Image 1 (tube, rainbow, N blue to C red):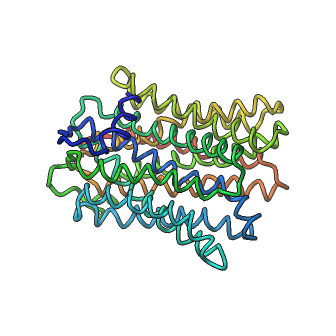
Image 2 (cartoon, helix red, strand yellow; image 1 turned 60 degrees about the vertical axis):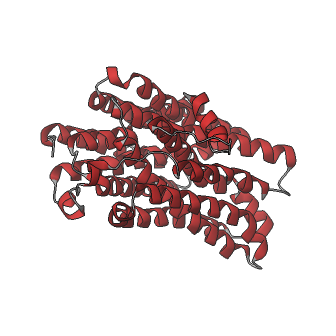
Image 3 (cartoon, rainbow, N blue to C red; image 1 turned 30 degrees about the vertical axis):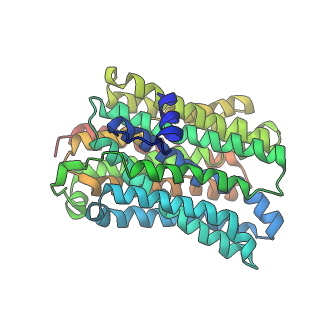
Length: 412
């Protein structure tokens, strides 16, 4: 599977002198690369934040604002795309998403040196890649859902696993390159990573693409927001995003503080371990999903998520607490793609607007989770364990919402 993706990425986009016939396998591969692209734009800049502060004299407050602005921009794109994606089409949206990502990465390398004050340049680059990342989040899942496949939930889980592999690749390769060549030529990094969306633009211009409901109007935003069943899925997505990001965003700091290791080792022991286990969880369901009950799998994962937060926040042994962090990655792997698949199963007429609103809910959770942990930790004299202990509320909401889904669930 992964060898085929690499083959498509590096070979099929090149000019061979003959006309290739593209099928839906190529479409799925393009979607995999799309999620790798989203992982690049979400994870590359944070790896360079310390460099930006040291080299350009940018304050911590402004650096923090870049992250907040990235999320806010993606939230706006999620909301607006519910209106315009169906109008301009899936292909145009997918190509535009990768154009924005490519431009954002190139601008990230160029603009800080062009402006006297580097921050406006970084902010401009952030706007571009945030718009692209938001569009990818909205458009890629519907494309996979609409493509011919016998096991939609497995395909969705496998798709989302590529975000994890992309995150691992960005963290490991970028860290290695910076260690080998130093930070003096850091601009090479975003330029190299910009090749990924650049080549995927070519692929998305050629692959066949189906749409949800095949031209029929979906439920629409107003009807969705008046549906009790959809509101349950909306809450599930908020809790899923919060459960994932509340732990992953603080994993590095938790590793450094708990084990007293360097930042490089902390990144490997924290976010890399989290992403690896999350990817393994999604890969497992992607391969075995046709034999598993999705709803039961999500319920078990939610209970495991609750246990992982308790283990991380209450254990006196830092190594065991770090194991709780890794266990969290394993438990949250199925949540985001699984809720997408459940919503599509129970509400097949939801259409693109449903995916856009669910992406919005997930991003709300991605903002709320780390914020709660950070604010509670700050209020408790910098105690991350206190912040993570309060974040137990998110898997609890998951468990309650899943119980409600069992009572309200029906096909719409």
